[in-house]
Length: 135
Image 1 (cartoon, helix red, strand yellow):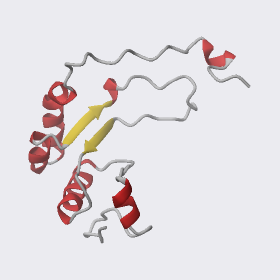
Image 2 (image 1 turned 45 degrees about the vertical axis):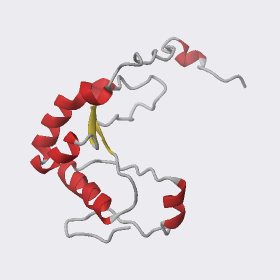
Image 3 (image 1 turned 180 degrees about the vertical axis):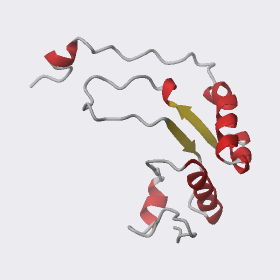
Image 4 (image 1 turned 60 degrees about the horizontal axis):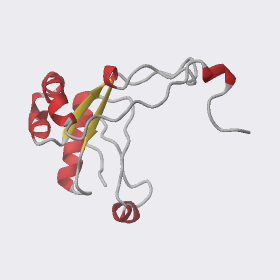
């Protein structure tokens, strides 16, 4: 079977958008919006925003749901990206602070290979109302 759009989606298929110019700085372009959203969620997040560790990507920036997605699929209203350097108590505190402030529907964690190998499966829990155990 050939790869690519099916006849039912061919009409809605669009080639990928060209990348932004090399001089484009997404953090600068999104800083004011991230500042405002973080201040609304929790003013204590300001330090993470100003350091560049926390960025908000609002839905309007990643476009409409593609036609090939199921009809009940819903894109998130916001994607919050928090950069941490490693598994540490400080990083865990930052993650917990953001989770408590923005109440996300989903959480994705990306670990480097060495961190992933040292973390025991099932040893990490997300914060609950009382503080939970951490990695």
